[in-house]
Amino acid sequence: MAPNLPSTPRPRPLDLSGLVCFETVARLGSLSAAAASLHIATSALSRRVRQLEDELGVAVFERLPRGMRLTSAGEVLLHHARLGFQELTRARGIIEEMRGLKRGHVRLVVVESAMRGPVVAALSEFWRSFPGVEVDVKVVRSTAAARLVETGEAELAVTFAARPRAARLEAMAEAGLRMGAVMRPDHELARETALRLRDLAGHPVLLADPTLMLHDAVRATDELDRMFPRPRFSSNSITLMSLLAVHGAGIALKTRLGIEAEIGRGELVFVPLSDTRLPVQRLVLWARRGLDLSRAARALAACLAAALTKVSEI
Image (cartoon, rainbow, N blue to C red; front, side, top):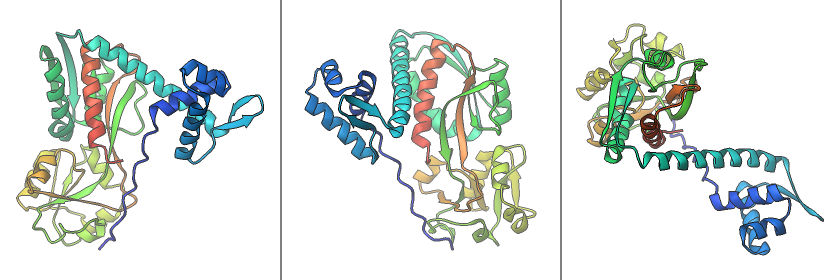
């Protein structure tokens, strides 16, 4: 069986106040000028910059006799810090606009597995703040979702990302999801911490059919074709795959998306697949590029983005 693979820890977010101090020094070119602008002592500002460098493990400034000059790492950090500040300013404007939102209508298209997980959570959160906004939701396949947003028949879509990215779509948020083997907790493989596709040989598998993007992800390695030239089951319904796994009909190959409730109730177990050729699945919140979204759509997009962040494994 596959060894227990250590998970890669996510890097800790940088402290926002430290980034503000860094950006101010970079903009004004000296500690004394930045300290005066921020109304703090020069020594305190110097400590904050040093702490930031310690967190990064690299110097962001060259200390010169007459000021501070950015290093190459500092240039990179400044670029991304300013992008982050712009996004925070945009978020504040959206929130201020949302405070007065009472009515509206949003057209949303989603894939089936997302509907059972993050989309339900996002809609519940959204209506707690905006009960008067009507949301029209259609469950479609990923390719159809992209087309509906491109043609203006929907304002937002939550769908697995197509390759390549559609030129007329803009990704507003995304979640990275690992592929795994989904089975009952009493299955003989359920206690494994990780599996490879070859470990499933001899067991009936439940697969997505070619109309779903999940099918392409699983077929990214030809090992599956050799082991399961004729799988027990294939379908365009992720829900049906999950229900059959609950009833012990086989092992479903999918992400954990949409089965969080079954996992929580102890009806299913998700064991990650460690085959390096299996791609990470990207669940993306899309809008049409250049489209000025309605206030209601922007508010719903904020809730959907937060929900995707919570389910992301990467």
